[in-house]
Image (cartoon, rainbow, N blue to C red; front, side):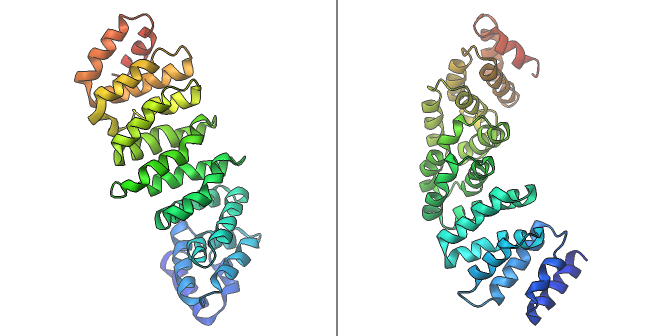
Length: 285
């Protein structure tokens, strides 16, 4: 039973106090369904008891209970921040892929709602052995980046800074092109560019890959001339991993600002140190 029918069944169970039967009713439900039930439970359960109920659900072995616990975390967090965050950490570390993904989204909700405190709780995740926790930091950063919240710019950039050297391929994909190139550079262009310039002095290949790919998204187009200053420098790196990232950024930027990027690539073709980068980029233009 899915959709409205499932929600009607859930409403009846909550009204009758049959909370133990919720997990069975939610078997196979989607994230929005779990969020709906979490809101209903937040309205139904007496103040002071929500964290206990969330903790009880998190300890169960069935997926539905654990997914519901995950969506209850933002409400339980109001009763006990530190312990609710510990529960979220455990759910992300030990959950299946959908639960890990949902947990990353919940982390983003907490960071949006309680930025100053949540960012401190999240900081240790950047050094954790769990790739799921490290990836969740990047997802949460994306969710918390808002152009009308300028005070968040530097804390968010500093939060993800330790992850720039992470060698996990999926995390890099979420970090350079997405968190940096699509969100932070769009929402905080001046400060993000300053950080990208600073990071471009690194000699770590993963860091330079993230810097180059940060200029591959639409927000780089308005600052194309400044972006080229950084990419020009990175194009001299002899490591294929790095110069291929520069090439990728150049052709994506070139499709948006061909009048500036094409002549630049033409000059690179005449420079034996950059000719491979230029040829690779021009294949896509």
